[in-house]
Length: 449
Ligand code: 5AD
Ligand code: SF4
Image (cartoon, rainbow, N blue to C red):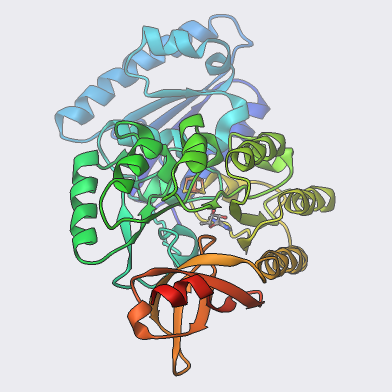
């Protein structure tokens, strides 16, 4: 985007050494995808960054007097109905960030030299605090940014949005910018909608949210699930997508105690390398994740896990990719989604050095998917000979066939009457492929029918 086309004006004042000059250029690069173009005066700018220097004496005092002048410009812009964001970067920010915020309230945020890649996040948070959305050029991409739904809604199953938005700011992701802050719908509104769905014959609810387990209504997601399970007709509850950081004790315990909560959990990890996880700003290590999985399995030993993975994040080495394979080997997912890293304009990771060549990403994705597919096939094969309760949803493609879902979300095909639709019946699994199971109604079900 050229400076003329830029919708927002960015003024950076640089003090000190050559390093700071270089950093100012980097900040301008990171901010360009958000629609900021450089301007050479602070008057009327949308964002002013003071890139400070500590070396020379009086540098700090100079920063404060400059901030005083900027405050006047900020007030002038506000008087015209506009907004000026003021940020302090560089060594002074690093050394006395909190003091700056205290002494000069016109400063919106401070950012140290280690955190320039987080500028888009800091700006998005500032805008949110002002009640505005960041009008950046984020082209939405269905496969990454939509709510994670890959099932058709039948009369028997329904989706119910309970939470929206995301405050996690993973450095590869646009959702926190495009969808805004985490918001939880009130419990009562959700219960009322669920009762309405149950009255229409829905027996399984999938609770949706970008960060569904960050649900902050009374009792959190565990409390909500417990209340939903009391609604007559609602026999099954699922939820997606969960963040490992929000998987609290109450929710883990609910998996062990609440029959309606299905033993299937989509819990994305993205990578098995701690360095990559940190660069992704995931807020957990691979070890945290593995210990979390252990605790969830202790509560519900048969739980099926699903995940999301990104290969070829900037700077990912062969060894770091291998660590993802190792984590997958330890968890053994029942199902997973995996993607090649795709730089999204406006996100911090898109401005990182060390972008991985496409051919390397393709190679890694193929290797990862081979392993994930192998595990999915094994997981399904292990169901052969078991009897699983299946909620029948619709007639199948072949004549005489009806299709439903196992507790582990696998599609299950049987020969049977369409009158089974809307009921939960035990099915003896006779065959398994990677994508689905085949079986027959168990004897005790036939006796009832
Ligand atoms: N590149 C690759 N994968 C991405 N995802 C989100 N953003 C990107 C990106 N820029 C993936 C993550 C997320 C899933 C919904 O999409 O794995 O969990
Ligand atoms: Fe995106 Fe991360 Fe939020 Fe998921 S948790 S929506 S990947 S920022």
